[in-house]
Length: 135
Image (tube, rainbow, N blue to C red; front, side, top):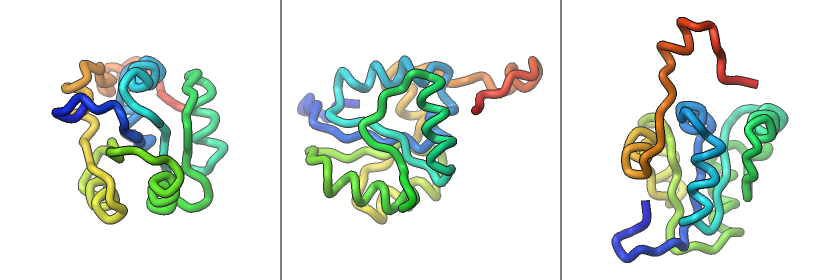
């Protein structure tokens, strides 16, 4: 996901739903650390749920949503973390509109996974086996 010039000066934010759609979110985070300046998770979920998700997967984030919600978090991150690019990885048109409204680039998680060689979860197989991906 580097830009055409090969810049690694990027702040990357995953919407929690997008991150949960990946088969190995901790591996993805480790991978992104090689080519981003800052990486974090944003969500409307309560802070404790987001923290539990990250902690249980040993994900070390540079930032995460607080009481300001996704839009407030993205605005705050942009003002506090200086980067050439700000990229928000999401799952739907609402995420795209949010990114655009706060001046971030938007990238659908399926496109990101394809570009970076990340594996998506097989939700059908997990549903059949009774496995759930949460706390």
